[in-house]
Structures are given as structure tokens and as C-alpha cells.
Length: 455
Image (cartoon, rainbow, N blue to C red):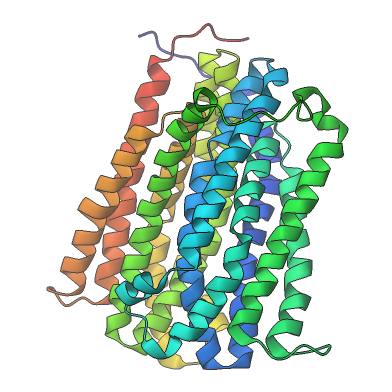
């Protein structure tokens, strides 16, 4: 294969376009993390019992959220490829089929969230929490159809390289959640105190508000007029739905593999005592917040790669992918510097317990070590998603997280007696394996691309 020379001007243009697209997505992702924090804070000031119930219920709800997000991730690359190919008139019909997926999936997640007792038993949730966890899940379950529809709308808008609405409505939802949650949890304005149920109701109302606002925006804004959203709404067509599921289902499984690894680690570490568990949660929360930056960048990378595929621009695929991965590595330098340089200061923000701060600071050193791996794996996977390559990445993550990461973590943490640090070494091993394999996969696919490159 011929050696590809690097066009520095094109690198700058591509990096600039990716950053402009990514900034609103990063804000949207950080805003999407905020409801969990708001729920935990509201519940924590109500009682420790309610806080434990809400945190437990949120952990179960996150599994539903991940399934919804992963499945609906098929919308963005599909739309971006049609947009890049100048076939915008076909987008409305595809989006209508995506809505059928969203509504059926939303109904299934509503049912699953209301019947989560076996899952609580498997997680080892103490019986005294069951009633409040169920109250939270029963309330928030009503948000499931709105959540899946919201993700479809978000995929449509981001696939059209319009990320600002995602940011607007994610932030807007917080202005609904915080005051409504306060009223319902503590019983203000004539309402009785609802505790855990109140946080679930408030979160569900906020998600519905976001979805309705986003839907009105898409239907009325002139930027969406030429994609034929208002044409006659079609009944489900398997020929259109199957390609979306072909992309989305592997993505949902991929996200479940990663989320499941972190949930599994948390459950195992929970056996080591309250101090260790609290320290782990602090380090994990910091790592999760940090991850929102490369995740937002990666969503932009998917769109940029998808646009290049639609133009049949092989060089554009390579520039979009490798520039995006380079940007992720650059921003992760900041996360690494903070976690390795200020671990005690960061831990002290979350706790005033010296033992918890010391252990959390120690675990933050491990979190700092996997920042590059975590960034590269999500960016490489997003490049492949832009190419609609999702099945091999699904297999890669299964091996990396559950054949490499979890066994190593369990072995070092328990038989070898390293405890929480051993489990975090397992996380490093799993994420590093995923990063190497996913990057290698994109490198090979991108090098083989042979369409006529656009100038």
C-alpha cells in the first residue's frame, strides 16, 4: 500500500471541526451525569437509608439507560452517512423507523425496571432497602419511553452535525429536576415527603420535559425542514429497522460489557468494608466525570467519520479518526496530571474522613494510570461506529473486559490479597487490552479503505 503523506493544513481543519462539534456534546455529557449527583445529594440530606436506596436504584436504572443509549447509537452514524452523501431527503423515513425501535425498547425497559427484584437479589441488596429501591424504580420507570425517544432525537441532531440542542435540553432538564426533586423529596408546597419515590418522580418528569422540548425543536426549526420529518409516518418496516439494529444491538452489548465490569468491581469491593467501598466510589466518580470529556469528543468523531464515509472519502476517514484519537489523548493529559498530581486534594472534596481520603487518593493513582487507555478505547470504538463496524468491537470488549480485566482483578484482589488496588489493576488491564485491540482494528480498516478520496 502506498505511504500516505500528512497534510498538516487538513489536520488543523479536521481537529478544529471535531472540537467545535464536540464542545456542546461534552457539556451535554457532563449535564447527563448531573441528575445522578442531584438525586444522591437530595436523598443524602433526607436520610442515609434513602440515599442508599436511591444509589442502589440508580445503579440498576443505569443498566437500562446503557441499553437504551447503545441501541439508539445507530441513529447518529446512519444519519451522518446520509448527510455526507447529500441524501438528506431520506433521513426522515429512517428516523421514523428509529422511533419504532425507541418506543418498543422503552416499553420493554419500563417493564424490566418495574420487575427488578430478582436483580436486587443477585446484587445482594439488603432486604431493608427493597421497598424504597422498588419505589424509586417504579417511579423512574415511566421515563423509559421518553428516554429512548430522547436518545433517538439526539442521534438525529448530532448526526446532522448539530450538537447544540443536546446541550440545551440536557442543561434544561436540570432546571426541572433540582427544584421539583426538592419539593417532592422533602414534602414542600403541600406535597407529603416522598423520599426515594420523590427522586424517581422528579427524574422521570425532567426526562419527559427534555424529550418534549427536543421534539418540538426538531419539528419546528428550519434546519430540519429538508429531511422530510413531516412526511406520512410509516408503519414498522423490517428492511429499514434491521440495519439500525445491526449497528445498535452490538453497541448496546458493548456498553453493557464495560458498565457490567465496573458494576462487578463495585460489588466485589463492597465485600471489603464501608471505608474501602466509599473510597472506591469516590475514585470511580472522579474517573466517570473525567470520562465525559473523551466520550463527548468520541461522539463527534463518529459523526466526522460517518460524514467521510458518506462522501466516499477514504482519506477523510483516516484524518477524522486519527485526528480525533489524537485530540482524546491530548485532553487525557490533563486528567492524568490532576489525578496523579492532586489525589488527596480531589478526594478531600468528597469526604472529611481521613481513612476514606487516604484510600481514595491511593485508588485515584490507579484511575490516572488508565486515563489514556480509556480515552483511546472509546475514541477507537467511535471511529469504528462511524464506519458501522460494531460486531467485531463487541467481541473485542467481551474479551478485554470479561476474559482479561475481571479475572485479573479478582485474582489480584482476593486470592492474592491486594484488595481494591488489585481490582483496579484488573480495570487497567481490561481497558488497556480494549484500547490496543480497538485501535488496531480501526488502523487496519482505515488503511484498507480505498474509495476515491475527496480533495
